[in-house]
Length: 275
Image (cartoon, rainbow, N blue to C red):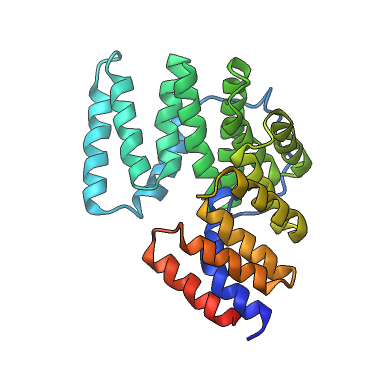
């Protein structure tokens, strides 16, 4: 079996790592500066379009729950609306509709101005950005996430996870180096920051710098030996460097940490193909 076939065998699992940190769309658009980008919630018209898109893919039970919560939110007194907004956001989030969840989180954050609410909204927009299925929505959600993360970091610059996520919103713009530099700056502050190491490893793989990717993932596994995705991505990086023995040893270690039986079965199959 040739290397490309082996990589496909592992890639079914390893690509979960890419999907965890990178948007599905590669969007080359100038990034709006975080200091000037709006952090306001989308307009009601924009959210109506997003919710219509979301509702097309929800179960009847989820639709019924969301309809009930939205009616309660609309009819609630001003003092009670934030509580219903939280409930609506959670319902959308649990259904995997991060864009609609982000709308209600941002609605609340815009009124409360609390750093916790801003961070929750930023994280939801980041998830919506990663899983956006078209260019316009990916750009819009990325800008919203970036603006909210900037507000959060202005209040508390020590939140390095927020900075690492904000950095990734630059990667698919025409200014990817700005995001990469942010990740490198995080490592200057904390050389063992897991998310920065993970994201830099992913970006190294994306551009074919597999030697650099192995360094990032090896470092990450020294920091956190339980990081199963890092084992998977490290194995694929080794394969791309023509080092199947190292890849197999890495996969063996991954088996010790993965809990998903399906993932374990796929790894075992990939290991057999490496023999």
